[in-house]
Amino acid sequence: MKNFSFTVRVLVLTIVALAFASVSQAQATRTWVSGVGDDVNPCSRTAPCKTFAGAISKTFINGEIDCLDPGGFGTVVITKSITLDGSGTFGSILASGLNGITINIAAGNPNDPLRQVTIRGLSINGTGASGGIGTRTGLNGINIVSEGAATVHVEDTIIQNFSQNGIFVNAPNSTSHLVLRNVTIRSCGVAGINTLASGANQTAFGFDSINVSECPDGFLAQNGSSGSIRSSTFTLNTRGINASQVGSNTFLNIDSSLITGSAIAVNTAAGVHVRLSRMLISQNANALVLGGTVDSGGNNTIQGNTNNQAPNGTTTLQN
Image (cartoon, rainbow, N blue to C red; front, top):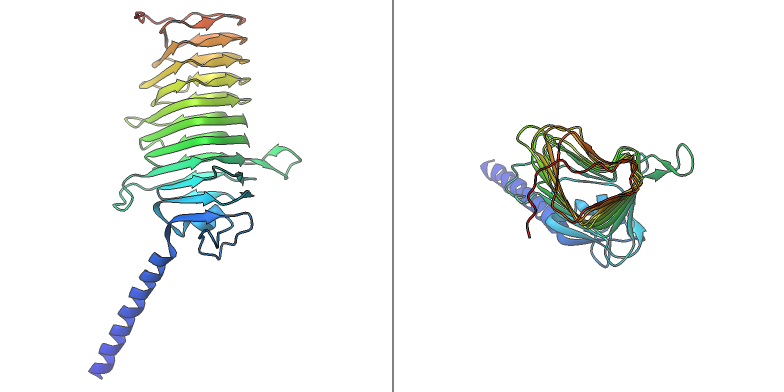
């Protein structure tokens, strides 16, 4: 009887060990999706998956999901550090009635200390059939929620036609970093980019070569949003840069950029500090709404607006 009991325990331990080994073997550092793939596949290059959602469970933390050939790879919820890469082909997400990409990485996982997501080379579209052709039924293109991720990089990506935001950092109780390079966002119902924080938490951002158009707010920088924008264009939005729904600790540096075709180019509230240099602000109804402080670092052109308000800060120009 004792021998039988011992044998059973050994069998149970063996089964558990094999199960863990099977899970480990099912994950890879690099997986692949294809327009002709299947999510029952192991997501290898020779047997790719069909969707990002199918591939993510088979990809290690800090791994990478690559697009093997053109296709629409579906919406996805990201709960670990990972890279989605559509470079070199046409990788897209059609998010009818949903968020395109949701990022929700819990803090405190010792196996995922980086909490970093990279999204590269994708088209994320919120247009859906319900409600008529061309209706924006998608919610947010990229939705960073709850504790979010420590850092989100978005590169070489187009986000369009969402009923709420192109990118929404909705993580008021944590500090998040948002880094954008060569990103186009257009036709959103609330804001092209919307960052939210509270208290001592902040959303730190760095935007380089972005283009935001046809949104109520090109960039809605809410309480605790601080960072820099460079070589970017905000056109045909109601407000190009809106830093009005905020408290203190909001700082924006904007360099070598164009804001045009807006009711208000730069809108500021008390407690906000904006620094401008080498800017062209033209063909807007109002250039600046000065509830906060707007400094000029020099070489700005604020002309051709219905109201050409001048910066009200006291920055000393330096050679």
